[in-house]
Length: 399
Image 1 (cartoon, rainbow, N blue to C red):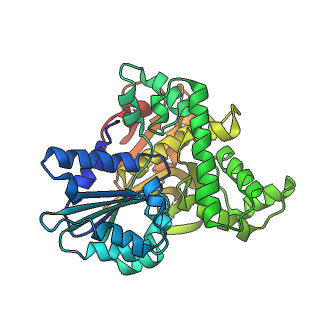
Image 2 (image 1 turned 90 degrees about the vertical axis):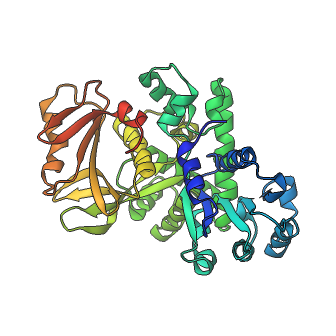
Image 3 (image 1 turned 120 degrees about the vertical axis):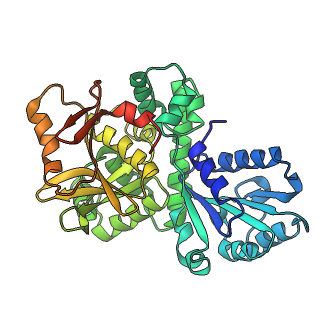
């Protein structure tokens, strides 16, 4: 098993606190394994296995449970009268109205509840209404670059980066050595997300349109994309559709964590903007699965990786607007921003360097400004703007 210390630390921090622990993320990112590893640690502390009640609703045993009454009965019938009962429910969204069972378990005096789900809508609607202020979300992703590096000790950062793009960041894929096996595995993940998670939520969805839209997003990573622009492009290519239809599909694709949307933030006006957002993929190995070896903009691919890492390190991440210039990312923590520019290479080109620094100069506050590049050189400062080698930045522990 690959150590996922960032997420494990969060589970430990919230253990036995009076909140439901909700672990969300795309399929196969490691949610079930995380809970299993957590249970192993509890066993090492001497917690009895009888006090750890676990159910995966996609397992053979879990498939027999069809409504929340049965789900509740499964756990209530196994509760131990003494000691804390640790409740683990995997892929909880498989049971309709699951939130009623979760709420009933939560109010038991001797229950500590942990649930996972592959859909962000887990935390909307009834669950949010019933449990407002009584849950915390742990947003899980596939392997970070640093976690991926831990699987391949002794490999150079540059070689790791190439592998990270082609072999995928999904934990199990990183354990496979044959490229054909990796692609088969990724194809299975992609088909499951498309057919089970996305098509399952949008039962009237057109599979052909969904796959074309997915291809479009993978092919336009880091480009500003609106529902209208996408609809117009697909219609011009012979697939007639409308902006509301595309918007609906995009929402569900975000709900299932296949793509993330980064909205824009006006740095000067301190306001959030509704237009000009960009989409980034949860895993770039899936891009290869969908598009094959079609060339990609190396700068946008690097942007994608930096964006996902920023999501791990910060509370919110936006595309920055500074006057008529764009800052790649504004990352917020505790209400304070850190500004990031990402450039694949500057290669001693003063004009390129100045172009990347110019948006920073529009910012009149004193928060950190960081330029990340693939140029292998020691960190340097440009009038307070720190330039770092991006692979070193990805490998170092978040502050």
